[in-house]
Picture 1 (cartoon, helix red, strand yellow):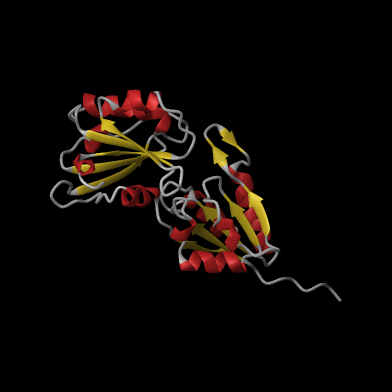
Picture 2 (cartoon, rainbow, N blue to C red):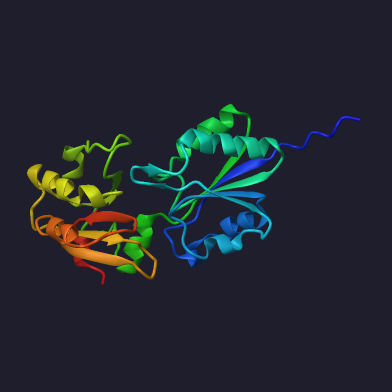
Length: 245
């Protein structure tokens, strides 16, 4: 008799939050505990993987600037292969999968392969960083708009919509901005924002090693240049930084 064909598996794209394992959602923890396979990124807080089954296959597919352990296409192939074997797969991502987490590429590849996919949102780094400072990113007296963008394009270049970023009464949160902080601050000032506008680079938000470098658009670049930064970092700019702790 031919061997039975396993039922098709499923892939869950799961947000692990900004680092603190206690910020993992209940649904994320439940899916990790049930998953046959977990593909996880570099920016996964210590303790998050403790929720995995002891016998689950764990595959590290993390990326760092200019150093990719595994090409994105190979990650797609892994997820499709395991799902087609009838396994339940968790693709575990730092923060929220839908905010600069390449979820769009992965969803498209899975759907094209006929694989069932579900997204489980997580706490994004902007929320984690703001919570540490008791900072309201949309303080109604200071900010009518919250803009979340990235500090570089896929090819590493800096190509921002300066006019939209420099509108008054808004808060900017710029992900992956460590290496471009000086250029971003200079660009914002050149396109109309005041040089004394508060700005803060947050490293490793929600983790014990978290660090906040606070200054202005004029002073922050030198502070960042003088400080070794190894963890994930984002830039917050706006009047709301004058509030909170």
